[in-house]
Length: 141
Image (cartoon, rainbow, N blue to C red; front, side, top):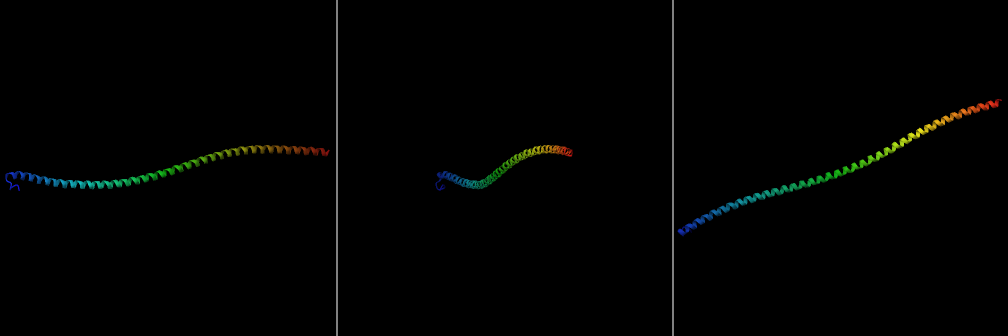
């Protein structure tokens, strides 16, 4: 068409050539944009998968943390029970020590009373012997 138009067509021919080059450039740019979009989509998909894996790991970590907290709470409760039991044992031991000390004091008192009773019995026995001797001496006369 440019050749049939003569000299005026030469300008049209230059414009047509530029439009063709521009169209090729647009086609190449469109293909490049297409490739970049596919790469972005692939990267986005990979990112989504990694995010989902990370979310699962976070959930697992949360579960482990909760299990650990539960276990620690049970341990604390058992330690408190053990502490209470140790206090009760300490109190009972102190009460037994006090009772034992009282028994020792009572046993000493009983020993003293027994010694006094034995001394008194010997004195009574000696007095009876003296009375018997006195009675014998009175009867014989």
